[in-house]
Image 1: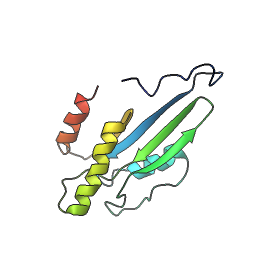
Image 2: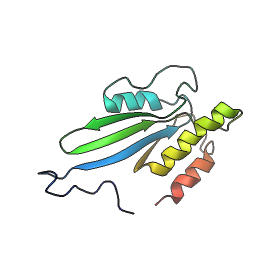
Image 3: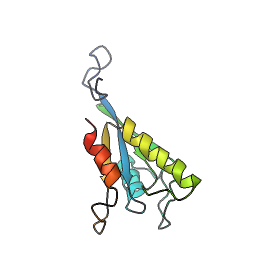
Image 4: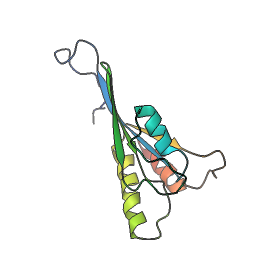
Length: 126
């Protein structure tokens, strides 16, 4: 599979143009939405102290002459207790599968084994 970060042909652009998907994952309330808003430079994601405010993927695009980055903010990772949470975790699973780069956001007090299943999946991705 070819990387989405390959430069475009010279007929498409005078300089090398790169593009890719950067997906932001992590536990609830660790700053994923705040980070995405800062990276995109716009308030696209809701930022609140209330856990699980992001219930689906929210995408923001940054364009320059040299690159395009599609950022994706995802719901916080957790073990689902009910149907809505199960659906929310499907967005996280999809984000892991279609990313060129994963930004795993954590809290300084977070236990290292809290998301062991997801971390093991990330380690297996080539």
